[in-house]
Length: 126
View 1 (cartoon, rainbow, N blue to C red):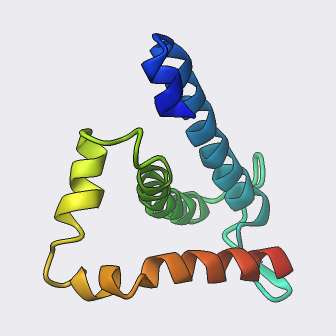
View 2: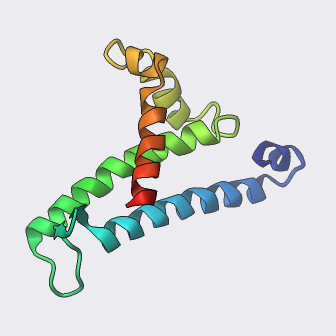
């Protein structure tokens, strides 16, 4: 759809749609992390509560934000691969990381995709 919009001289609508989809994923991840914190069965570690958050909780959650923001950028690059071609994100995630010697095995066996699906199922059940 995004490339179709771009071909019809409405490229600005494609950019707005891509930004909307990416921002929606970003917002959902951020809300989930702030709402649930790090839960381990019945205990919550490092919760983000207004006016009651300690600095160590804040720093742990910022670390998690940094981790999943990179994962989210990777996911958006793969999900909208045809639209993100010839961009820096595609160069990083689509070319350089897939050809690194350490990660080559993980890319060939699609470990990251399986982990994403497993994690989505576990969080949906939880």
